[in-house]
Amino acid sequence: MDALDLARWQFGVTTVYHFLFVPLTIGLGVYVAGLQTAWHLTGKEHYLRLTKFFGKLFLINFAMGVVTGIVQEFQFGMNWSEYSTFVGDVFGAPLALEALLAFFLESTFLGLWIFGWDRLPRRIHLACLWAAVIGSNLSAYFILAANAWMKHPVGYEVVDGRARMTDLWAVLTNSTALAQVPHVVAASFVVAGGFVIAVAGYRILRERGLAVLPGRRNAPAAQDATVPMRRLPDMWRTSLRAALVMTAIAGAVVAGSGDLSGQLLREQQPMKLAAAEGLRHDTAGAPFSIAPGVEVPGLLSLLAAHDPGATVQGVDDIQARYEKAFGPADYIPNLPVVFWSFRVMIGFGMATVGLSVLGLWLTRRRRGGTAKPVPGWFARLCVLALPLPAVAIISGWLLSEIGRQPWTVQGELMTAASVSPGVSLGEVAITLAVFTVLYGVLAVAEGVLLVRHVKAGPELPPIESAPTGAAPARPDDARLTPTLMY
Image (cartoon, rainbow, N blue to C red; front, top):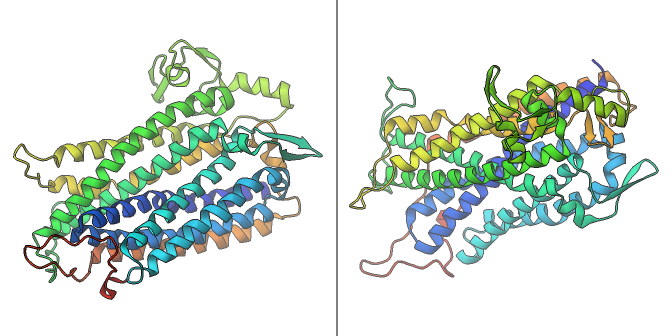
């Protein structure tokens, strides 16, 4: 093992950890903004309660994402200086746009939202949250556009051993980016939806005095003095239904954008596609392996080219072509990791979306318009399914990045040539150990904060209701009372 191996481990560990928070932040921000919009339009108290409750979870996660993301910036200079030298002139523009436009927009308006509960008109306060949400999605776009350039470099030329940008628009509208952005953002909504589904399922069980695991029974949650107990399950049913809808719709977008990504892989990164299937040789009518020894004839060709008889290149044949084009080297990524990451991503993602579709059916309204109660067994299933979308999106990241090896920039710069030449094995080992321990501590802190908040539930005083017979108050320009601050 050398410095290159440990540098790859370090970047992988820190990126996977950071990527646990990014998707949840993107999706949960939109969900909270939707809840506050519903309160703004209807004035109904339970929407405000849900906004405040999930808003705190969103802020905890956002803060952890910022902290863990900063470390990655330093690694480019410390461990990957040759890579930074090569891509710096290209990456400068999208990353500058991400920092100066998207992140500033996100952080500035999020701060206004946090501290503006009792200071801003409701309409302006809501607009601040939506501005922050738009900023987080713009941030994702610029970062994913930079990442897509490494997989399919366009709009550049190599001058004196460095990539120089010649067309910013080509970089930002890279075909790989246009497929990757909706795929990752929609997957983020699935992650956030799965998180909300699990939280709502837990709260429903708690209000009924049921345990997550059958055979055990909890004491019912303490009576909330401000809201009748009968309304609490209805509130959680509302949040559950909203999350189920978001997850189902986002799952459809993930599938559609994933189909487009598969077609692009066949043209731009054939080795990754072959490794994901474990296909050794060029094959017409290539099968798809559900598991070793279980194949569906022609399915891989259908997925990759929309033609069950199309030819898909194989790992060994691509290796031979790359040796002729780029010289002797091992161009085959870690086949077991890529193979199983692909299947875990698809399997766990489909399971999450299937759970949302099942939940929408189980909680549909009866003919008379009465709402069906959420079955206890389904609420338990929602809680137990919490890890599925997170594991799916992490597996997708592993497929995307490990499948590109041994390239950092496809066809231009290999990983072995990207590492900092002056960094020793011991230096990387020390920083890897420090970051791993530090991130472990942060993970425990994050988990404790989230669990405590979910167990405590919403604890807000009631909103002053309008006099009997009066029309519900419209939240146009009224200000929130100081009692509703965090």
